[in-house]
Image 1 (tube, one colour):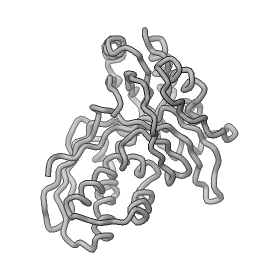
Image 2 (image 1 turned 60 degrees about the vertical axis):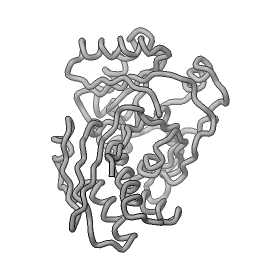
Image 3 (image 1 turned 120 degrees about the vertical axis):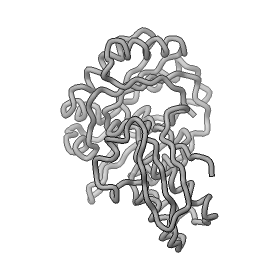
Image 4 (image 1 turned 90 degrees about the vertical axis):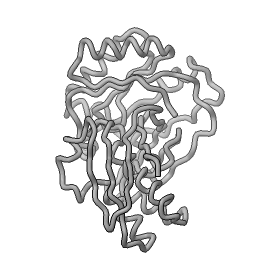
Length: 287
């Protein structure tokens, strides 16, 4: 089959609204996906599953035990659900930075589930699939859909956004540091926040930015305390010409800026590469 793409996830806002007795946090987030920033997976039939990781971020992905990789865990979960004892040799081209809040591992796992359902002609029921995805991680259900969505609860409530967002351009900027999600949640000290207002229907760019400015990322303070480079990146991005809003995605360390103009976004990306060459900078739009 053709290569399967796993697009980067961006949380335009992220509110922490509560916590269950079992420790799982309750979230509310408007989640979008990058049009041209994605990992790439290819599948070759094989007697069992194996994984080869390539690409610019392969070294970071290969740093842990291969058996713990979410792609292999997802593939084996689908095989069990489908009663299959064969597998695939999977090549994962890592183009999304690790530990950046862009959902790279979750997107890869979700893409593996989609691909195997197609390759095996699997007919997983919605409830069975949703349970499988959620067990892999809180971000995996929304990454499976890979479309603008509202993400709530512990990741178990994913609602497609049925109103078109205005056109805008994103500059993603990752400083030379990464975060660990559980550490960021553990360092968070503020009270729980409220659910955001619904996305305004038919809003133009200015109204959308005004609405989005009333939201926030409730993990920013904790992430910055653990990883000061995030604050530096946010300050740097905020000062770039044409940046209308700068915010962290997920639990960091990647931050993003929203621009109305493609040209302003392109110039800002060039400035990032010129003045912060050790950082990763990429301009994009959403799917």
